[in-house]
Amino acid sequence: ARLPGLDLVLEGEAARVTDGPTLEQIAARYRDGGWPAEVDGDAFTAPYSAPSAGPPPWHLYRFRFHTAFGVATAEPHGATRWRFDR
Image (cartoon, rainbow, N blue to C red; front, side, top):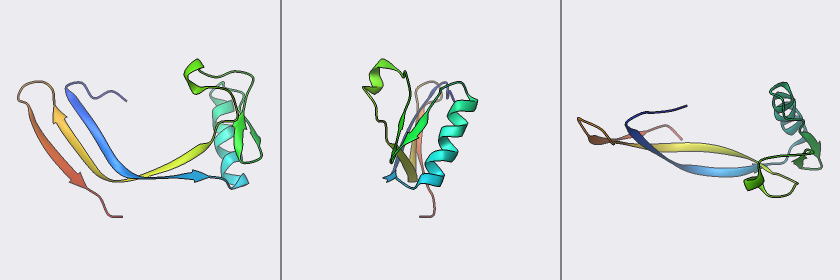
């Protein structure tokens, strides 16, 4: 998603996802979107990916944020912070 005129920073914790059912579910969604991801152990593999991703395997992480900062880059400018329940 784009947020024209707003820079957004999220703070939280990232944790690696290793359980098979969740990996299979996400891989299926990737396949539905056109990327032929397969689960291999506790990571994804595929015949191709973005060059910046590096070689497989690729690991999945769940990110749970608790704070967001928004800084306006256009008029009227300003900044704010949102806190979410942990």
